[in-house]
Amino acid sequence: MSRAHSPLRPDLAVIASHVEPGSRVLDIGCGDGALMLALREEGCDVRGIEIDGACVERCVSQGLSVVQGDADRDLGDYPDKGFDYAILSQTLQTAARPDRMLDQLLRVGTRAFVSFPNFAHWRTRAALMLGGRMPVTRSIPVSWYETQNIHHVTIKDFQELAREKGATIARDWYFAGERPVSRAGANARAEFAVFELAR
Amino acid sequence: MNTHSQTLCLPDPLPLDGGGELARVEVAYETYGELNADCSNAILLCHALTGDQYVASPHPITGKPGWWERMVGPGKPIDTDRFHVICANVIGSCMGSTGPASEASDGNPYAMRFPVITIRDMVRAHVGLLDALGIARLHAVVGGSMGGMQALSLAANWPERTERVLVIASTSRHSAQNIAFHELGRQAIMADPRWQDGDYYGGEAPDNGLAVARMAAHITYLSEEALTEKFGRNLQDRDAKSFGFDADFQVESYLRYQGSGFTRRFDANSYLYITRAMDYFDLAEEHGGKLADAFAGTDARFCLVSFDSDWLYPTSESRHVVHALNAAGAAVSFVELSAPHGHDSFLLDVPALDRVIGGFLG
Image 1 (cartoon, rainbow over the protein chains, first blue to last red):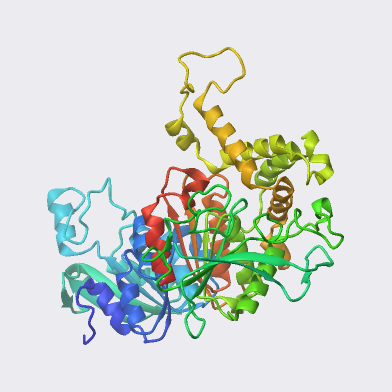
Image 2: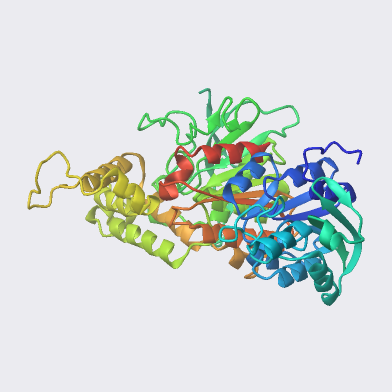
């Protein structure tokens, strides 16, 4: 990747380098705006939604257009295909209804990027199978009782949901930490996945 | 800080939403900072109900510092080293712009002959001022409370006139509760025998009624938490209750002080007219009933800010505007800031607000 976004999380770096420069982008759950800043440098018209007030304040202070809101509730306000891309990074598993959020994503964006931690990673499987307890791992670092991840999902589950929703997977990327993982066996070997979807 | 106080007489009569027009409209305004060569660094600041053009310069009657001195000045979030800040007294008010206390064509004050005006009429006068100043497009329009209504009205009705719209602690429409509190204030004024159907100029003004109106309104500007924190049930300069109706409690004494102080600087009829304009404000109604249509095709960037302790114009009202702007495809930011002071938070020390304003204005 030739662009100067080295501090970006690997999934965000993938997304940043595959969004067409100059696109209209909605970043759902934009956090502190790292991806938005990278995309702004690419000449994109980027908007964000973020639930955490302190994050929103940081974004707005940097001149980003971010609305404090709850994506579960507020995505419905955005017009159909108002964006070239709708991006949901590490947020799907926190949604009240991930299936409905995916619908909204594919409604507001011509294309969508989705990234999420893969619950079927071998470390997670091992923790549950051998330890008999809900896993706390590098990609799922918070205990079951305080995690925001209320809908854990695996790569296979997501592929199936995308199919059910009539979405095409245009491209996919898999990672273990910073390291890319091939598609073969990704459901066990990848800690997180990034999908580019279209419908 | 350095300021220029000026009054402009609009060259043409001002058409009014209520029908007819207002002739010889004067607009009193202050400016801070230099206008650049291509006139692209102007910020129009819109004041609230009882505010005025003295944003960052001492008030000529009370001598108190400007109402937003903490926000406007060299190196401050609204940086007058970079921006040319204009603040105009709204029409209907009493600090130099044409209002009910101004002279009508017969040489007597308008009093209740002054036409009922709207927020959009106020903004139409602002636009007349911008025309006269040669400012085709603002860097930003900024306002809190009623000032936010003006900012929204400018964005909806003169979308080509501003690049940015910053709306703080405001609303796109007055709620039943908002109208109810204003009606209480108006009735207090009109029930004062000195009001004389508005014809009190030259005699004693209905200060008692105006003070009660201000007291009631002031309660709506503060949160319960702020009142409790500031006063609790503390007694005023006494050790025990008086078993009378003096201001036993500190909060009573404070409200009385706020009420009587207000009458020194504000005209009762102006209070009637401006509260009416706010009550009539409903931006969706002006645009066929759908708020998103008010902003159709806008290319301005918007930023809305609410405060979690503001029950006068609560966060839900800002969200309502944000939803409409999203539906219209506008570039919008919104943040609910945490501050304990209620509606008045926008005037007080809230560092997060400084950062948001500075960041949004760029």
